[in-house]
Amino acid sequence: MELDNMELREQMCDICHKMWQLGWVAANDGNLSVKLPDGTFLATPTGISKSFITPEKLVHIDKDANVLDSVGDYRPSSEIKMHLRCYEERDDVGAVLHAHPPTATGYAVAHKDLDRYTMIETVIAIGSIPVTPYGTPSTYEVPEAIAPYIQEHDVVLLANHGALSVGADALTAYYRMETLELYAKISLTAHLLGGEKEISRENIDTLINMRSKYGVTGRHPGFKHYRKDED
Image (cartoon, rainbow, N blue to C red; front, top):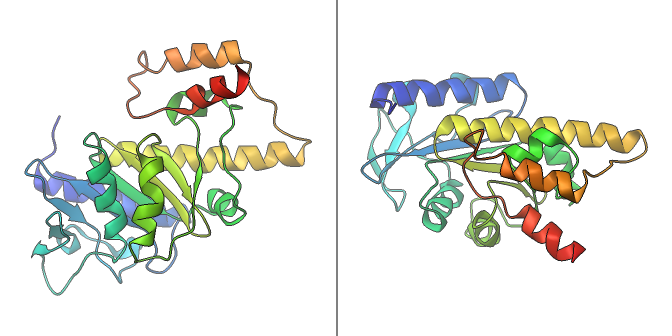
């Protein structure tokens, strides 16, 4: 069911508050945007903690990040360039979420991807998770760095920065970020216990085929790459 404008704004605020409560963002970190039916966007404003976001503070912008309307002098984050590039690259993307979940960001800072097949739920929900090349925040370096990866991945780690997830809607993007952080925690624990054990190729194939059964949408290229390595 499609949300009306106020319901959507309230949902975005709920997600922002949840991100802050989970410790994925500090101070003014992180940003969320959603594509509207008319091709414009709602985005979180710059300079405000996600714990203080309220519906009227969200900014309505066009595809060039021009402010169409806002209450007060609110502007979108300078990282909106990264969001808009995701929408340009994929017409199935309806929301973009950027945060700094601590364990996943630890992998990003260490330049260690999560391109492995070790947890059933992660294989089904988000697939492989690469680390994109370093880009200076707020510049066009980040959009350029993520563009090739967003074509095939729903979740990526941003080198020395954080994580980015996309989805058909805001909740899907949020759930993917939540799945990423839990997977990163589990992977780190497995590493401390002696190392992760990958799921067999046959079972990975079965899990991939279950995605449609569970209504999982998005892009999942990882198994293609896994097969290439194995063949």
